[in-house]
Length: 368
Length: 258
Image (cartoon, rainbow over all chains, first blue to last red):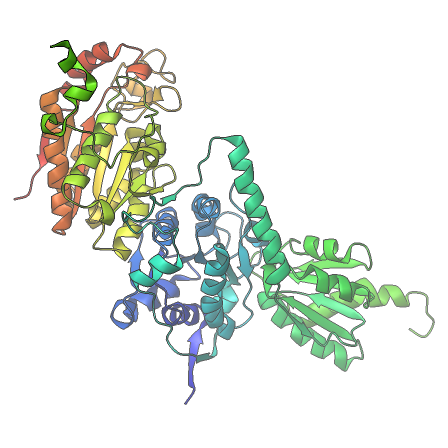
């Protein structure tokens, strides 16, 4: 029998990481994602799987606890919301520099500063372009449902260890707080220490006489060696761009106009498409699931098919830059976004599409 | 008789009274001649080796002069961001309670930028060992004022001496962490004389032993010289340390198990 439950997005990913065989969670409370830590504390994963949960004294400590655990080849994670993720950037850069796999969750709220606790998508640049210092990328997964919050726990750990990279689930306050049904799957067993030693020979588990010592460090003062390290990282990112792009297309086959939107905005656009189609406007949606790697090729392909692209984000226009790069001038690309924690309404989004593209195209026609 | 004074003749197994621990690598130490770090490294590695823990130990290196500690310690190690070593060690130890985990940190790392991580790891009673080398100055970056710099002491960023009115007071973080419920054994040692070296080694042995017994965080401060940063000869710096550092940072146990 299927195990289906009604859960909040934050609870779903907490249950997801337990079932994905996570070894340790280190986190600090912040709205709108505190349910992750609360759920984990309430559900005693140490009794269920042996998973450790620790409330740290800060987001800075949390991310460096993740670093310590990840350096031992363990499946570890932290979660936070925008101001807390800003604090973690130091540690994320160190994780990038040492190629340590881990899962990070950002349930985005509006900023800058303390901003608001309402949902936003204004941390796109920080997540996708590298929020900390140095040339690095994370794999960024953008869930648009509570089910995906759950699913991306397992997927995130798989990708993190497959590529030795940090995976960030870039959610938002709406997806984190809303309740939907979630289908749960079987418990993935945690790796034993012996399995870790075999699967991850780089992990610091104590040095046996049979191998050289393992060192987790991002430091190399020799610029020639440091450049090689950086080139290796860049090659890895290019490989990920070739192999890990994920997206969902909705009514794109006959589309004359295209929404590009992720997360909560994508759900708004789905409704806007229904409203538009009822009015005879052939509009579709390209929903990036991975924000890095970005579905550039698919958007480039669609940009030759449609008359206009509207990038819809709860930001002042961040992802739109990547949409424009993908379209590369083939078609007009516009942005629409609400700020400060406001989610745009479907009719509002459709009106913008009509104003920006359709009304313009029809300008001067006597029939309209 | 002269034949008998050759290296080959003297270095016979039966004549062996001391050798360097195998847990120090062959890499040349990056520390200035006369600095206490080398001795502190050796004592820590000797203890790990003598207790048979080399296959079971994970060390955490800081940012500072000892940022490259992993080049010299022949064990698995992680290099932490500045001040975050206690958090990194917490992550390791919570996931591997049976491993021996230590941090090796200087005063800028532990008592300035990492104060929060230090205090909370101590307060949670993380079952790790903290080796804290306090020389009252930022050595690696070129001799700037540290949280532990003495009043009036001249550094690159307090060129006219530390003015406590505008620059604050030296932080006795070791006394501070001794107040916390999670620390089990807190002590202050030095490694500038053979007698002090022996005492410091005993303190490290105790700290690691208590970790094996799951007793909570053990904190070993080693007051050390920084002859380069203090702009003195090694010998003068040791005299200066005795005359100036020790009155403010008195040696001895600060918190001992009841």
